[in-house]
Image (cartoon, rainbow, N blue to C red; front, side, top):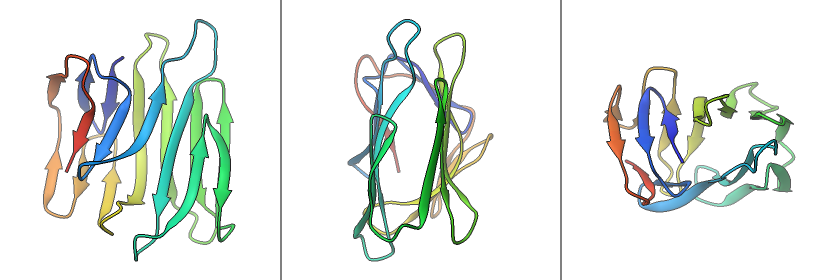
Length: 141
């Protein structure tokens, strides 16, 4: 599976995105004609689990501050209090999964920002890189 996060292309990955060495997002390969399936966990400032998404369905939303909308080819999670996009993912016709936008906290309480041009955590960032992961997980931070 190929995943693009903020203009960084990760080829031949297993669908898991590790953020600061912790698996936080998982993309399940869509079956032909099937929907995009994302599972992820979101944390607050003190590293408490506040949202859990399983197969693109909101399974846990402790404070009821997040909403999820989806289509067969996209997923959008927004914070209803701030209006900010927490995570936006799209499946392209080519099979590429693109993380196009987002602002979410890691389990260590650091802010991960995803834009169309880069991802950034604190002072670490990447833009425009291509990596063949040979079946391993995407590692950010």
